Image 1: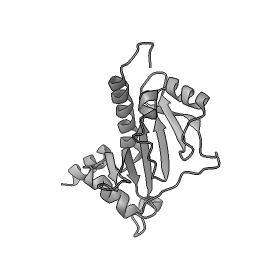
Image 2: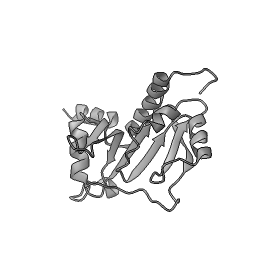
Image 3: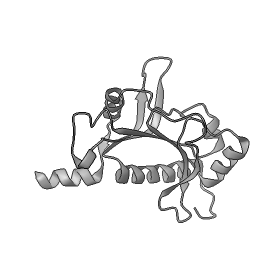
Image 4: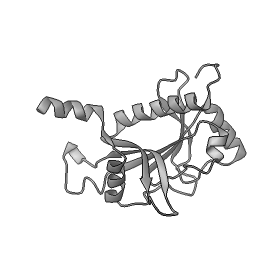
Amino acid sequence: MNSRTYSRSETTAMLSELVEKRLESRTSYWAREVSFDRGTPMWRRIDYVGFKPFTPNYAVEPVSVELGVFSCYEVKSCLADFESGNGLSFYGDENYLVTSRELAERLHDMRVLPRNINQVLVPTPKGDRLMGFYDLSGNGSPSYRHRPASEMLWAMVEANGRRAKRYRKTKEKEV
């Protein structure tokens, strides 16, 4: 990011765009604002959830869904957003906190980075993609999936999930 100061909404939009770009290139299916336990006191919403089925040798197997990888992304644009009590729900096999470099450094210095995540992702200096900034995968509190694949996929469908563009193009050619 350049030296210009971005508003909270501009920062959120920029980070969200980079998450969507990453999901398009790394997953088969993804959704934004995915809710779990709706209508209960345990209701949580995850900013982005991606899914990549397990396909050894590029073949779909009966266990492709259950052994697939769910990745969860929480976008936080500022300290107030981080401390708001909204979000920071990580239910996936891989879990990421996405924020600006400055906020990542501040959260690290304050020692408040979530323990149950794989990495903190920040924009590259050019601002064209996300890169790992802090790797927390070996911090003694491993990241793991908390929900069955069927529940994760259903929540993604309810959130109007979308198939990654590279798969939509393939499907369109077949028709």
